[in-house]
Length: 214
Image 1 (cartoon, rainbow, N blue to C red):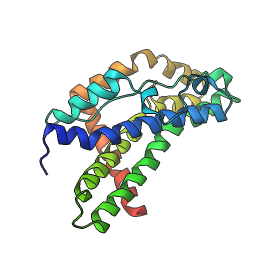
Image 2 (image 1 turned 180 degrees about the vertical axis):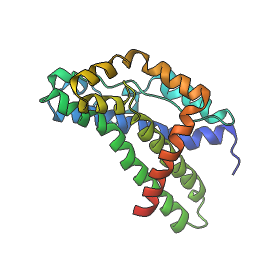
Image 3 (image 1 turned 120 degrees about the horizontal axis):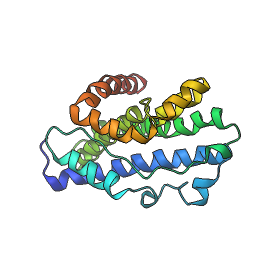
Image 4 (image 1 turned 120 degrees about the vertical axis):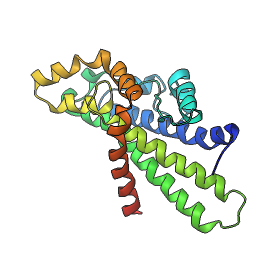
């Protein structure tokens, strides 16, 4: 259905905030469990979205993507600080800290999918059936996007961290050199439309997995 600007913001606001909060809190939790309390000591191991919001990446950029026709949803939160040298086993544990964020988004996508089934099948005629269904669809979409996007093997994305922890030292050092340019690479992929072509098939696979499981 066609939504006006206020309705669109209302539908997407909570799913976006929950998605980025779960993602960053999961990084902080994994880091603390594996020996680095940096994020915990800075108050980032929390489900309070105010601790993770970046005014541009979490508010302005997703808002523009949602409101502009044909835009691909894109955004980011304040990165959780991790001292990889403080981890119990830096090279091995780096991958688990990095993987925690996308895994949290996968769990959130399943939760929103369950809420969608509840809204679509159990509340027929209810005044909040449609808003909950629309919000649940937004929740599924934003979490799948964040999961797949962050698993791309481009540092400083989580997928880049995972690759660095897996690759032999020489290749890992080469990949690490890309990190200062990672954000600009993403923007270039987004502007040219290449990012959408990369993510769409992967997102479809995850969506299919959710359908099969549920």
